Length: 195
Length: 195
Image (cartoon, rainbow over all chains, first blue to last red; front, side):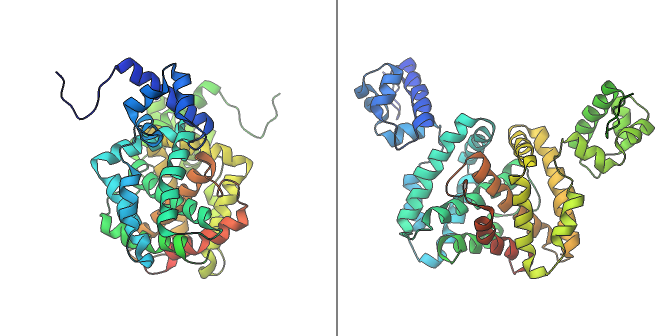
């Protein structure tokens, strides 16, 4: 009897569902994709999709090979004084990029850059799983909320490109504290100050 | 008789030189690469390299298929009041990304993301052709100059990723003025304010 945290299931079926999920999420976006449509695409019963992957969100993270679950990370990072949210967010993102999961995250970013289809999945991931949560946690309800979130995303994506892909010094070798100090006021401005 | 602004030369020889240049620039970096070493790699006389491409810098831009020449753009953008340098720099970079040359620039960035070798060329380009010039023009002579330049690069690379590759709204569709207003104070802080 096989013992493992993950339900192995039929690997061919699992893979068919993941392939179908990537296709449907990229085509329709996260919000408009349904478990039902993914099941149709994979030619399986919707109950099987739920059985293997649980929620639509979990299926989405699995289909992207996401090394992290933003739902578990973002609320904790956003809790606390609002005027230090930038610092906490930068520290969180750097801790993910610098962790063992970071290599997988960089691989995802590289893949998103080179492939239109993967770019669409990455956009859905960033917008629906990361930015939307951050906006909700900070209760950014002004009309600029989406702009603020996208600007924060631009700074965090850019630091990943410079630190891990292009490896431009001294950012490539800087310790996380130095970068948090340098980046946090800028991210804070995007979050809560006049634009 | 062929009339064209560009000296056509022998296309095979030109291509051999460009291939050799990419290889040597990626291996040694821009500063340590020499026309002589590139000529040896291409198995041609160094005089021929000069004849076809002029300076090492021009050869570098040609080998990267750079759609722009930073030497022609940066000094003009940096001239003017120091406390508005961030605004001028953001406006310049967006005008390049948004121009017909921008598609080529985005293609370069995509390529740099997917390939270690192209990433090294891109790093040499950003550091030696763009950041070094900007530092010199602004006379950023403090010990943080390289950090400041790399942070600016992170913001500009990130806005390219979000606007042109991931196409996250509202940044993807925003007009340039809106983005300049949103980004300029952050870039200005990286350039001249305490980090």
